[in-house]
Image (cartoon, rainbow, N blue to C red; front, side):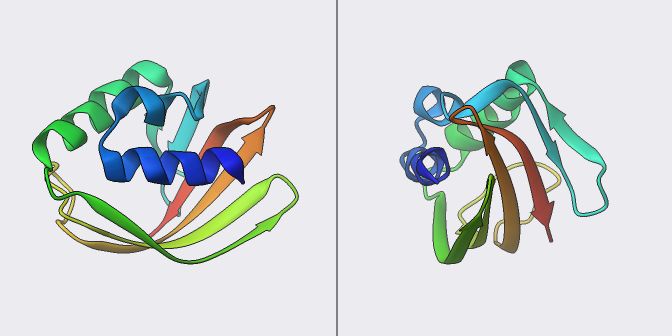
Length: 110
């Protein structure tokens, strides 16, 4: 759970280096259907770097959460997003898999 909470805190601070430090270098992020949205640290840096730079009021509020084994599931409400192709607000479920102390797989349920 620790890297999951740390990345939420870094996201809210728009601290890219702290955020990326929570993820494995070969992280994969998928949508609910299993389609790849992002793969690897370079793609994460590009996407989240733009998001953090262009979203001064960015915020993620964790409304509920639970952990089972290597998975942590968060219900999040995100607002203040300014990223082409994405809405400014999202109510989303996110499944994080943590292995060896890093998030290595994420699935967005939206």
